[in-house]
Image (tube, rainbow, N blue to C red; front, side, top):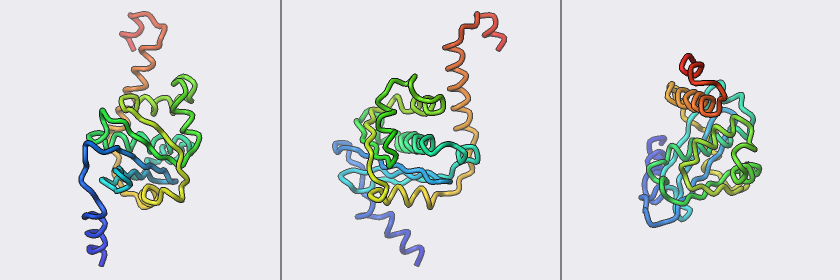
Length: 177
């Protein structure tokens, strides 16, 4: 029975082939312990993604988790969305305004997350959670993933780069660091 359900959930007409000429939408959600994202074209799913949050990420404020869900969705579906205009649906209304404001007006962790999606042409729109049942389900029925150091290393590298480029230290002190 489970195999049959899995087969039905991953074959057409549930999943569609990606069409480069059609508009792209990503619907994302963050739950207490997981992230979910679905790539959509004309309201039909093209790809699904979910993962668990690290213990550190589980301690993030909800707005930070929701922004992390946007980053996760964009990075997971990079090959589909890079160079395209993308509508991102989130059930966290404040993110609509935060992504439109200057980067410096956001809290530090959100700034770092926003920098990770700077390469994409995103428009973030609020959509009530009850209408985002796929992303919501994926965030609650996430895949247990052993988090590699890659994500952590990228974040550390970004923090170090930010400190170095915005530092008022002289060159000798920077070389020592």
